[in-house]
Amino acid sequence: MPLNQAFGWIWVLAGFLSGLLLGLRFHEDSWWGGYTSLQRRLIRLGHISFIGLGFLNILFALSTPRLRLDLPWLSVASWCLVAGGVTMPACCGVMAWRPALHKIFAVPVVALLVGVGVIVAGVLRS
Image 1 (cartoon, rainbow, N blue to C red):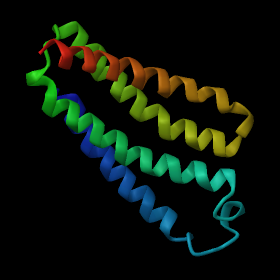
Image 2 (image 1 turned 180 degrees about the vertical axis):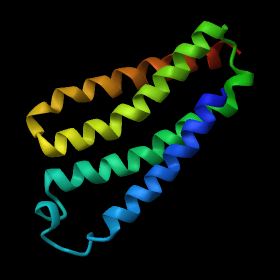
Image 3 (image 1 turned 30 degrees about the horizontal axis):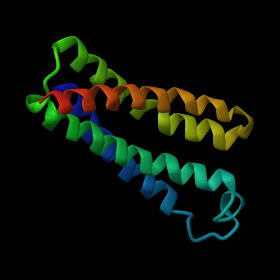
Image 4 (image 1 turned 90 degrees about the vertical axis):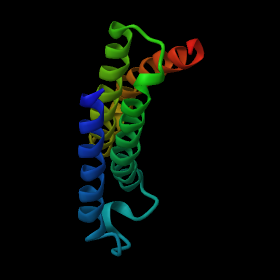
């Protein structure tokens, strides 16, 4: 799907840019509570989720011709992958700011589970 391919490449770029910004201070031992602090781990997770979920969207876009799914199901998978891609780094950032909001991780996880579940069904049908 063209949406997922464009979104995926934009998200990979966002991951590289966020890595550049994080890399400006990574050498400071106490930055954001130190290397093993929850805040710093969540920010790193958000940074890498841009890249990983960008690649997942690109892979989906390249796989759609071989999936045996009707257009409505392809749309569900497409939008779930985009929603998961948008909300995962956002949730990581929010949780780094307010750890008590950890339950918001259900939003990207459910979106990605539904999207990938639909894709797996399409793979198994082919």
